[in-house]
Length: 194
Image (cartoon, rainbow, N blue to C red; front, side, top):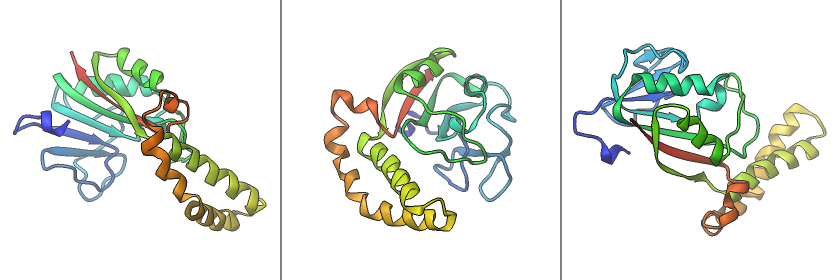
């Protein structure tokens, strides 16, 4: 998406953490910190209408209680013909940060954008089915072998994460199959505002 941007574009990275993707991209986070340009929520972005040429939201909307409202707010701050890069999980364990509400199929992600003013430019798997399976397998084995003891769960998770890691190497072979969408770890979608 960055390659499609004009030289003097202005972008917004929602839920950026401390990252700095590009000098022209501003960062939005819930709390202030280094490299944070705006403090606020994706449900109420503290910026004027049609300010940005590009908006990025990677692994953010699963933590928002109203993802449709978040998409509307993103559309509000994005210029006409601007691009939106959205990445969301499908098969992944619960991970509150501070909350965790949703998982999205490839059809659900398309529906999110179709409800707003976006043409879908591209929709693909970002995290393949082997990694999706790996994540759930590690969680499952950790739960079984930790016997409900919290500190043992973390130890077991580390052990099984290392032991099961080779499963992830299957993704290049599985990601191209027709059934890859059944247990993919996640997706990305690129939309263009019309």
